[in-house]
Image 1 (cartoon, one colour):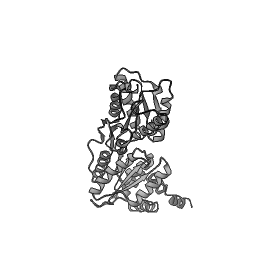
Image 2 (spheres, one colour):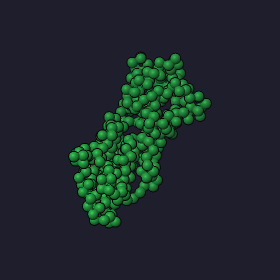
Image 3 (cartoon, helix red, strand yellow):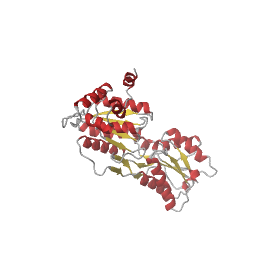
Image 4 (spheres, one colour):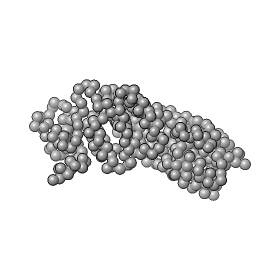
Length: 344
Protein backbone atom coordinates (compact mmCIF):
# COMPACT_ATOMS: atom_id res chain seq x y z
CA UNK A 1 0.00 0.00 0.00
CA UNK A 2 1.72 3.23 -1.11
CA UNK A 3 0.79 5.30 1.97
CA UNK A 4 2.20 2.67 4.32
CA UNK A 5 5.35 2.43 2.23
CA UNK A 6 5.78 6.16 2.65
CA UNK A 7 5.24 5.75 6.41
CA UNK A 8 7.96 3.09 6.59
CA UNK A 9 10.37 5.25 4.67
CA UNK A 10 9.55 8.30 6.79
CA UNK A 11 10.11 10.65 3.83
CA UNK A 12 6.74 12.39 3.75
CA UNK A 13 7.02 16.17 4.14
CA UNK A 14 4.62 18.67 5.69
CA UNK A 15 3.66 19.64 2.15
CA UNK A 16 2.79 16.02 1.37
CA UNK A 17 0.75 15.74 4.59
CA UNK A 18 -1.19 18.84 3.58
CA UNK A 19 -1.83 17.32 0.14
CA UNK A 20 -3.03 14.02 1.62
CA UNK A 21 -5.26 15.81 4.10
CA UNK A 22 -6.67 18.02 1.35
CA UNK A 23 -5.71 21.22 3.19
CA UNK A 24 -3.14 24.00 2.85
CA UNK A 25 0.34 23.98 4.39
CA UNK A 26 -0.61 26.89 6.75
CA UNK A 27 -3.51 24.76 8.00
CA UNK A 28 -1.11 21.96 8.90
CA UNK A 29 1.09 24.56 10.61
CA UNK A 30 -1.87 25.75 12.69
CA UNK A 31 -2.59 22.19 13.78
CA UNK A 32 1.06 21.50 14.63
CA UNK A 33 1.28 24.68 16.71
CA UNK A 34 -1.98 24.08 18.58
CA UNK A 35 -3.98 26.91 17.03
CA UNK A 36 -7.73 26.85 17.58
CA UNK A 37 -8.81 28.22 14.19
CA UNK A 38 -9.14 24.77 12.56
CA UNK A 39 -12.34 22.73 12.35
CA UNK A 40 -12.48 19.58 14.54
CA UNK A 41 -12.82 17.31 11.49
CA UNK A 42 -9.81 18.84 9.73
CA UNK A 43 -7.76 18.81 12.93
CA UNK A 44 -8.49 15.11 13.47
CA UNK A 45 -7.53 14.27 9.87
CA UNK A 46 -4.26 16.22 10.02
CA UNK A 47 -3.32 14.94 13.48
CA UNK A 48 -3.88 11.37 12.32
CA UNK A 49 -1.49 11.89 9.41
CA UNK A 50 1.07 13.63 11.62
CA UNK A 51 0.91 10.77 14.11
CA UNK A 52 1.26 8.09 11.44
CA UNK A 53 4.29 9.84 9.95
CA UNK A 54 6.04 10.34 13.25
CA UNK A 55 5.59 14.09 13.67
CA UNK A 56 5.28 15.50 17.17
CA UNK A 57 3.71 18.79 18.11
CA UNK A 58 5.81 21.24 20.04
CA UNK A 59 4.88 21.41 23.76
CA UNK A 60 2.05 23.89 24.19
CA UNK A 61 2.69 24.80 27.82
CA UNK A 62 5.09 27.73 28.36
CA UNK A 63 8.49 26.63 29.65
CA UNK A 64 7.93 22.95 28.83
CA UNK A 65 10.93 21.81 26.80
CA UNK A 66 12.52 18.58 25.68
CA UNK A 67 15.86 19.80 27.01
CA UNK A 68 17.80 19.00 23.82
CA UNK A 69 19.71 20.95 21.16
CA UNK A 70 20.59 19.31 17.85
CA UNK A 71 24.08 20.23 16.62
CA UNK A 72 24.47 19.28 12.95
CA UNK A 73 27.65 19.19 10.85
CA UNK A 74 28.32 18.12 7.31
CA UNK A 75 31.25 16.01 8.56
CA UNK A 76 32.89 15.32 11.91
CA UNK A 77 36.39 14.45 10.73
CA UNK A 78 38.16 17.61 11.93
CA UNK A 79 39.40 19.17 15.18
CA UNK A 80 37.61 22.25 13.83
CA UNK A 81 34.29 20.54 14.61
CA UNK A 82 35.48 19.60 18.11
CA UNK A 83 36.06 23.28 18.95
CA UNK A 84 32.49 24.16 17.87
CA UNK A 85 31.11 21.23 19.88
CA UNK A 86 33.09 22.37 22.92
CA UNK A 87 31.46 25.81 22.83
CA UNK A 88 27.91 24.56 22.25
CA UNK A 89 28.17 21.87 24.93
CA UNK A 90 29.53 24.30 27.54
CA UNK A 91 26.56 26.65 27.20
CA UNK A 92 24.03 23.82 26.87
CA UNK A 93 25.39 22.02 29.95
CA UNK A 94 25.21 25.22 32.02
CA UNK A 95 21.57 25.59 30.95
CA UNK A 96 20.73 21.98 31.81
CA UNK A 97 20.21 21.11 28.15
CA UNK A 98 21.58 18.05 26.34
CA UNK A 99 23.35 18.14 22.98
CA UNK A 100 22.74 15.68 20.13
CA UNK A 101 25.55 15.74 17.53
CA UNK A 102 24.92 14.53 13.96
CA UNK A 103 26.69 14.55 10.58
CA UNK A 104 24.86 14.77 7.25
CA UNK A 105 27.83 13.98 4.93
CA UNK A 106 26.18 16.04 2.20
CA UNK A 107 23.63 13.30 1.49
CA UNK A 108 19.91 14.03 1.31
CA UNK A 109 19.10 10.59 2.70
CA UNK A 110 21.14 11.31 5.84
CA UNK A 111 19.42 14.69 6.19
CA UNK A 112 15.97 13.09 6.01
CA UNK A 113 16.98 10.42 8.52
CA UNK A 114 18.19 13.17 10.86
CA UNK A 115 14.87 15.00 10.45
CA UNK A 116 12.95 11.86 11.36
CA UNK A 117 15.05 11.45 14.48
CA UNK A 118 14.62 15.11 15.38
CA UNK A 119 10.85 14.82 15.16
CA UNK A 120 10.95 11.73 17.37
CA UNK A 121 12.94 13.42 20.14
CA UNK A 122 11.22 16.83 19.75
CA UNK A 123 14.44 18.84 20.09
CA UNK A 124 14.11 22.44 21.24
CA UNK A 125 16.38 23.91 18.57
CA UNK A 126 19.00 23.24 15.90
CA UNK A 127 22.51 24.61 15.38
CA UNK A 128 23.56 23.90 11.78
CA UNK A 129 27.29 24.20 10.96
CA UNK A 130 28.66 24.82 7.42
CA UNK A 131 25.78 22.87 5.91
CA UNK A 132 22.66 23.65 3.93
CA UNK A 133 19.32 21.94 4.41
CA UNK A 134 17.02 21.14 1.53
CA UNK A 135 14.30 23.83 1.34
CA UNK A 136 11.62 21.25 2.24
CA UNK A 137 13.46 20.24 5.42
CA UNK A 138 14.03 23.86 6.36
CA UNK A 139 10.32 24.47 5.89
CA UNK A 140 9.50 21.52 8.13
CA UNK A 141 11.63 23.00 10.91
CA UNK A 142 9.81 26.30 10.52
CA UNK A 143 6.36 24.71 10.59
CA UNK A 144 7.24 22.55 13.57
CA UNK A 145 8.39 25.66 15.40
CA UNK A 146 11.98 24.41 15.85
CA UNK A 147 14.39 27.39 15.98
CA UNK A 148 17.42 27.24 13.69
CA UNK A 149 20.79 29.00 14.01
CA UNK A 150 23.47 28.61 11.31
CA UNK A 151 27.19 28.72 12.12
CA UNK A 152 29.56 29.59 9.26
CA UNK A 153 26.83 29.29 6.61
CA UNK A 154 27.68 27.39 3.45
CA UNK A 155 25.51 29.68 1.34
CA UNK A 156 23.02 32.46 1.93
CA UNK A 157 20.50 31.32 4.59
CA UNK A 158 16.93 32.57 4.79
CA UNK A 159 16.61 36.12 6.09
CA UNK A 160 14.78 34.94 9.22
CA UNK A 161 17.60 32.56 10.25
CA UNK A 162 20.24 33.96 12.64
CA UNK A 163 23.84 33.29 11.59
CA UNK A 164 27.13 33.21 13.50
CA UNK A 165 30.34 33.60 11.54
CA UNK A 166 33.88 34.95 11.71
CA UNK A 167 35.61 37.84 9.98
CA UNK A 168 36.93 35.70 7.14
CA UNK A 169 37.69 38.55 4.74
CA UNK A 170 39.75 40.50 7.27
CA UNK A 171 41.47 37.26 8.30
CA UNK A 172 42.53 36.58 4.72
CA UNK A 173 43.65 40.18 4.44
CA UNK A 174 45.73 40.00 7.66
CA UNK A 175 47.39 36.70 6.69
CA UNK A 176 48.48 38.06 3.33
CA UNK A 177 49.51 41.46 4.68
CA UNK A 178 51.75 39.69 7.21
CA UNK A 179 53.58 37.89 4.41
CA UNK A 180 53.81 41.11 2.39
CA UNK A 181 55.26 42.92 5.42
CA UNK A 182 58.04 40.31 5.54
CA UNK A 183 58.97 41.13 1.94
CA UNK A 184 57.18 38.34 0.09
CA UNK A 185 55.68 39.31 -3.25
CA UNK A 186 55.01 35.93 -4.84
CA UNK A 187 52.44 34.51 -2.39
CA UNK A 188 50.45 31.37 -3.10
CA UNK A 189 46.98 30.59 -1.76
CA UNK A 190 45.63 27.13 -0.95
CA UNK A 191 41.91 27.93 -1.17
CA UNK A 192 38.93 26.27 0.47
CA UNK A 193 35.90 24.91 -1.42
CA UNK A 194 34.42 27.77 -3.49
CA UNK A 195 30.85 26.76 -2.56
CA UNK A 196 31.49 27.98 1.00
CA UNK A 197 31.09 31.66 1.84
CA UNK A 198 34.09 31.54 4.20
CA UNK A 199 36.34 30.26 1.41
CA UNK A 200 35.30 33.01 -0.97
CA UNK A 201 35.76 35.67 1.72
CA UNK A 202 39.30 34.48 2.56
CA UNK A 203 40.18 34.49 -1.14
CA UNK A 204 38.81 38.03 -1.49
CA UNK A 205 40.85 39.16 1.54
CA UNK A 206 43.99 37.64 0.00
CA UNK A 207 43.38 39.45 -3.29
CA UNK A 208 42.59 42.74 -1.55
CA UNK A 209 45.91 42.63 0.34
CA UNK A 210 47.87 41.98 -2.85
CA UNK A 211 46.11 44.77 -4.71
CA UNK A 212 46.65 47.13 -1.77
CA UNK A 213 50.39 46.43 -1.95
CA UNK A 214 50.47 46.93 -5.72
CA UNK A 215 51.08 43.22 -6.38
CA UNK A 216 48.98 42.00 -9.34
CA UNK A 217 47.03 38.82 -8.38
CA UNK A 218 48.24 35.77 -10.29
CA UNK A 219 45.63 33.06 -10.79
CA UNK A 220 48.35 30.42 -11.19
CA UNK A 221 49.26 31.00 -7.53
CA UNK A 222 45.77 29.97 -6.33
CA UNK A 223 45.51 26.19 -5.84
CA UNK A 224 42.27 24.36 -4.90
CA UNK A 225 41.75 22.67 -1.54
CA UNK A 226 38.95 21.25 0.57
CA UNK A 227 40.25 21.93 4.13
CA UNK A 228 41.68 18.39 4.51
CA UNK A 229 45.46 17.85 4.93
CA UNK A 230 45.56 15.75 1.75
CA UNK A 231 44.30 18.68 -0.30
CA UNK A 232 46.91 20.98 1.23
CA UNK A 233 49.60 18.45 0.34
CA UNK A 234 48.41 18.21 -3.28
CA UNK A 235 47.94 21.97 -3.66
CA UNK A 236 51.39 22.77 -2.28
CA UNK A 237 52.91 20.34 -4.75
CA UNK A 238 51.10 22.13 -7.59
CA UNK A 239 52.55 25.44 -6.43
CA UNK A 240 56.06 23.98 -6.06
CA UNK A 241 55.89 22.64 -9.62
CA UNK A 242 55.35 26.11 -11.08
CA UNK A 243 58.23 27.52 -13.18
CA UNK A 244 58.55 30.19 -10.49
CA UNK A 245 57.20 28.80 -7.20
CA UNK A 246 55.92 31.18 -4.51
CA UNK A 247 58.16 32.15 -1.60
CA UNK A 248 55.20 31.97 0.80
CA UNK A 249 51.83 30.25 1.02
CA UNK A 250 48.63 31.24 2.77
CA UNK A 251 46.58 28.10 3.43
CA UNK A 252 42.91 28.97 4.05
CA UNK A 253 42.70 26.26 6.75
CA UNK A 254 45.21 24.97 9.32
CA UNK A 255 44.87 21.35 8.26
CA UNK A 256 45.75 22.30 4.68
CA UNK A 257 48.77 24.18 6.05
CA UNK A 258 49.90 20.98 7.77
CA UNK A 259 49.52 19.15 4.46
CA UNK A 260 51.70 21.82 2.87
CA UNK A 261 54.31 21.25 5.60
CA UNK A 262 54.48 17.59 4.58
CA UNK A 263 54.77 18.40 0.86
CA UNK A 264 57.70 20.68 1.62
CA UNK A 265 59.34 18.14 3.94
CA UNK A 266 59.20 15.42 1.30
CA UNK A 267 61.02 17.70 -1.14
CA UNK A 268 63.74 18.46 1.36
CA UNK A 269 62.51 22.04 1.84
CA UNK A 270 62.31 23.81 5.19
CA UNK A 271 59.67 26.07 6.78
CA UNK A 272 60.22 29.02 6.92
CA UNK A 273 63.74 29.04 5.43
CA UNK A 274 62.60 27.82 2.01
CA UNK A 275 58.93 28.78 2.17
CA UNK A 276 56.82 30.66 4.71
CA UNK A 277 53.40 29.20 5.56
CA UNK A 278 50.37 30.85 7.22
CA UNK A 279 47.21 28.97 8.18
CA UNK A 280 43.68 29.88 9.24
CA UNK A 281 41.74 28.62 12.32
CA UNK A 282 44.39 28.38 15.09
CA UNK A 283 43.48 24.81 15.97
CA UNK A 284 45.09 23.58 19.23
CA UNK A 285 47.36 21.15 17.37
CA UNK A 286 49.18 23.76 15.26
CA UNK A 287 51.06 25.29 18.18
CA UNK A 288 52.80 21.89 18.40
CA UNK A 289 53.60 21.53 14.69
CA UNK A 290 57.22 21.74 13.57
CA UNK A 291 57.67 24.63 13.34
CA UNK A 292 54.68 26.07 15.23
CA UNK A 293 52.28 27.53 12.67
CA UNK A 294 51.64 31.23 12.16
CA UNK A 295 47.89 31.40 11.63
CA UNK A 296 44.69 33.41 11.82
CA UNK A 297 42.84 32.77 15.07
CA UNK A 298 39.19 31.99 14.40
CA UNK A 299 37.13 31.98 17.64
CA UNK A 300 35.52 28.59 17.00
CA UNK A 301 34.62 27.83 20.62
CA UNK A 302 33.13 31.29 21.06
CA UNK A 303 31.14 30.81 17.84
CA UNK A 304 29.70 27.61 19.30
CA UNK A 305 28.88 29.33 22.59
CA UNK A 306 27.10 32.21 20.87
CA UNK A 307 25.16 29.81 18.62
CA UNK A 308 23.95 27.85 21.66
CA UNK A 309 22.97 31.01 23.52
CA UNK A 310 21.11 32.26 20.45
CA UNK A 311 19.14 29.06 19.91
CA UNK A 312 18.22 28.95 23.63
CA UNK A 313 16.97 32.53 23.40
CA UNK A 314 14.87 31.59 20.38
CA UNK A 315 13.28 28.71 22.32
CA UNK A 316 12.02 31.37 24.74
CA UNK A 317 10.74 33.56 21.88
CA UNK A 318 13.58 36.07 22.35
CA UNK A 319 14.93 37.19 19.00
CA UNK A 320 18.63 38.05 18.60
CA UNK A 321 19.70 41.55 17.72
CA UNK A 322 21.44 41.67 15.32
CA UNK A 323 20.52 38.43 13.54
CA UNK A 324 23.86 38.33 11.66
CA UNK A 325 26.99 38.20 13.84
CA UNK A 326 30.65 38.05 12.76
CA UNK A 327 33.22 37.46 15.50
CA UNK A 328 36.66 38.96 15.07
CA UNK A 329 39.75 37.12 13.83
CA UNK A 330 43.39 38.03 14.47
CA UNK A 331 46.89 37.03 13.40
CA UNK A 332 48.92 34.75 15.70
CA UNK A 333 52.61 34.91 14.76
CA UNK A 334 54.66 31.80 15.50
CA UNK A 335 57.70 30.33 13.72
CA UNK A 336 56.49 29.33 10.25
CA UNK A 337 57.04 32.72 8.60
CA UNK A 338 60.20 34.70 7.85
CA UNK A 339 61.48 37.11 5.19
CA UNK A 340 62.23 35.50 1.82
CA UNK A 341 65.91 36.42 2.29
CA UNK A 342 66.05 33.62 4.88
CA UNK A 343 66.04 31.18 1.93
CA UNK A 344 69.57 32.18 0.98
